[in-house]
Image (cartoon, rainbow, N blue to C red; front, top):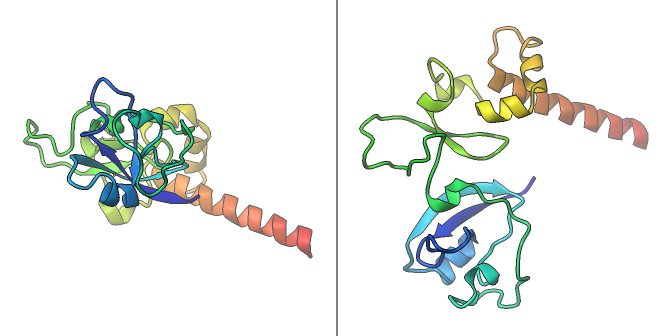
Length: 177
């Protein structure tokens, strides 16, 4: 699934407006000098620069004829807030040195200490993170952890993706041969 780097422009999307995201190209061209919050990469997101979310504020210099609205999903990340604690990152009021990890499903960012695990494993011990809310929504992921002894639910999720990819590839190969 294609991903693109996204930014929230705090200069154009004030608290009284709906959240909006802009792509890297627009962040450099249309929002140069603005206060931007990096959202890292997201799936299935179209740049909002110049659409109705910015009406009366600006027109996109790169693509002035945009659709009025996109079918994007906006989380509290677009307001510069992250995790279940809904705090900014970095948080000037938080003295705890903690890693931020992105959930592979909802794409929200979480402090390691708020993931619901006793100890956050070293980075080389996992490939993806799935937050507790997504595990509740996707109960089947927990079932796969039992099929991979000694692995965490997060590693099991990664292995599920590999298995689905292999099964899909095998099915496609069988159909074409």
